[in-house]
Amino acid sequence: MPVPVYLPLVLGLALAVAAPRVVRSLPPPIAVWSLTLAAIVSASTWIASLGLIMSTAIDRTAFVAAHGHYSLAHWRHVDPVAVPAAIAAGVTLATCYLLLAIAMLREALAVREVRQLGRSLRDDGTVVFVEDSTPHAYAVGGRWPRIVVSSGLLRTLGAEERRAVLAHESAHLRCRHHAHLRVLRLAAAVNPFLRPAVRASVLAVERWADEEAAVRLGDRTLVARTLVRAALASNRTPTPSGALAYTAGDVSRRVAALLAAPPRPRWSIVAASAIVIVGVVASPVYAADQIGALLSAPCPTTSSAH
Amino acid sequence: MAKATDRAGRRPWGGLEDEVLAVLWAATGPVTATAVQNELGGDLAYGTITTILGRLRAKGLVVRSQVGRTYEYAPAQDAASHTASRMHSLLVSRGDRAAVLARFVSELSPEEERLLQAVLRDLTEPDESSDGAASAGDLPRSAVPHESVRVESVPIGSVPVESVSVESVPRESIGAGAQAIDESDAMAAAAQMGRATASAGFTEPAER
Figure (cartoon, chains in turn green, blue):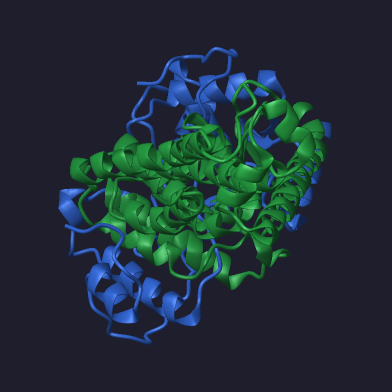
């Protein structure tokens, strides 16, 4: 039976590609947690399978064979992976580690300056208001969590709508959305096929905060209206950095979801996804086990080391 | 509802103190406690407002000035608010999103903007009360004649002077948001956002 050495790689990629599509129909909290879990599984499987493929070439060296007590000639005969493929896997693996290190460094640096400033502000949970004619409202997660709202946005909204904005942003902090997004960004640095999953989780995180605000205020239409007013007002004033914008259509999706009934969990999808994830996690273990069996299989022509 | 303080001793965000502070920041100048009470809705007692304003003053977030016989409140512009502005400029100017969680609003395509304006028109029509929730916030702000004269029905001697001041609080001093949004008459689009988004090619977020 052929050794499924490439199977974990394929499954990891399939998970990365399928996850954003599957979670679209799930309630936002389940969607976010599923995407985070899928990203962790996909990225680790990606690394594990690259390592496994690369290891087949390493097993061909006399040094390793001597310590591993298997027959070098036998392995060279039954090795399921061609040497060039194994080398390519090794190079890719090294690149992934490098990209991950760069991503972690970027996250740390980006947060550092802001954190020093944020630390010097009040720590009793008061929202931070700033004088800025451009409408802004955002949450900064982490060790010194803050909600920042600009006077430009405050002037656009009524009292109830301001309440909706505060409820939305406080939901981001309460549900620790920044942690989810950070995990997804790091996983996408390792496995670039996870980029659509990052975008999907950004939207799901906003939907989650929308739902929390709607529950807290007891009025879905109010949250929808607030979102529409804020989006229209913000669109009128050019923002300094366009990189913070969402993909087009996100606001429409959020408003449409708020004007509809709250989404219900579809447990059949959750159960199926759980089974898939278990399968993906198990695949590199299975492949490694098969390779191990090949290595230690008794060879008819040469004697085994023990 | 939420606990008074969480593990780190912080109040939950978005509470009454933040709402009062938001009113002050939205105003274009100092405002009275009465104006704050009017803005936040009738079910908040005047005493609650003044208590909160007192707490905010104690924290150094609000300053009070006396104008004639009334007190007026404004947000404090001190070193802390300067630090906050610096942090805000830093976050907003950053290209990457690692530090900032997410912004409440985003950029819109022209098509999306038209769609949303149509939705806003439908949501703010006065004769159409959505789900029976007909509060003052449902009405377009320009259509609500704000109570410009408010006379408290309490004896003068028992409460601070400002509560009986007959004072016109023009909408503009709290936040002239009514004219901020252009309601262009571009489309007679579908009333339901769902239909509109489907026809524009945006997919529905949840299957029902």
